[in-house]
Length: 352
Image 1 (cartoon, rainbow, N blue to C red):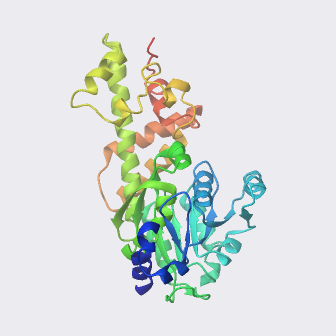
Image 2 (image 1 turned 90 degrees about the horizontal axis):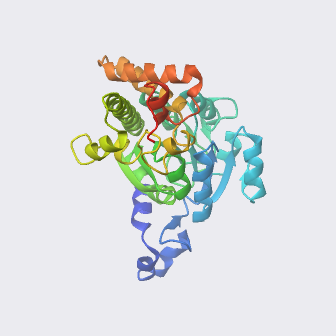
Image 3 (image 1 turned 30 degrees about the vertical axis):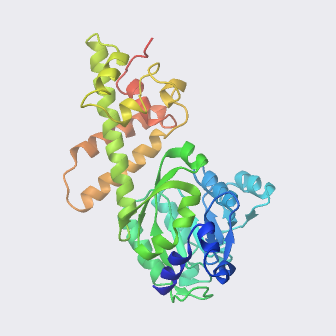
């Protein structure tokens, strides 16, 4: 507990720290591009999972001044990082051996478990060499997150840079998609020990603009699947309403004006409108390319459905949304943004 408090108290803007005791600066490396300063316990960061999101997040950590080492099974992306002078490693375990903190950004619970507990995994059979903190930003179910958090806490920390006998884990999935990952404006939903969360805030600030502490282990993962469930149902409701309106002789442009000035206003109507021709700069304006793939939405709805089933909760909208997006993927639209449900499930018309 003490190490977290020490880090929290020391993480202050550089301008303030200079006015205090000069010797405080010896444990930090300042970042020239911002007021964030890096605690020595956080400066070596490992990153595993360099997909569309992870590659942007890792790049922002490099830009912020962290000493970053990366791993991914995609050799092309590894070469891209290597060409930029960033350290690349052949396995998650090799990343862990040189890192104070390891962040993972992976596609599914199975991938996360393999990276942590598989051969050459981060936990190295229960003997963690160096990292005192693991942060998983993948979208997985809270049940898996809690099991993994427990496994991390049972590991022995061999090379101690902090006064802890075992490492700790935070679940910190994100919202904002690829554009926010690239711009460094992600929202992090974080579960785990609160003091670990507070100590890790400089990391989150280097990759995002909003960080929300949700509670104990698994609550960050729970928040993410709840957010995506609400987003999916909202998109279905708006799309269905637009198609009904078109069938009754009302244009989607007119309905959008009505929705956005009345009680139906929501993100799916005023920010991410699914009708081609109504709004610029959204996936519907570019044939639903980019954005949040329907396969990912189907995966997240499966996670939500399984979580609801696990606790005996009735969730008819979750089940219906899951079935619709699964059908969308089965029909070959999985790579398209999930808002394509307007065109490819409801057969909605473009706004001319």
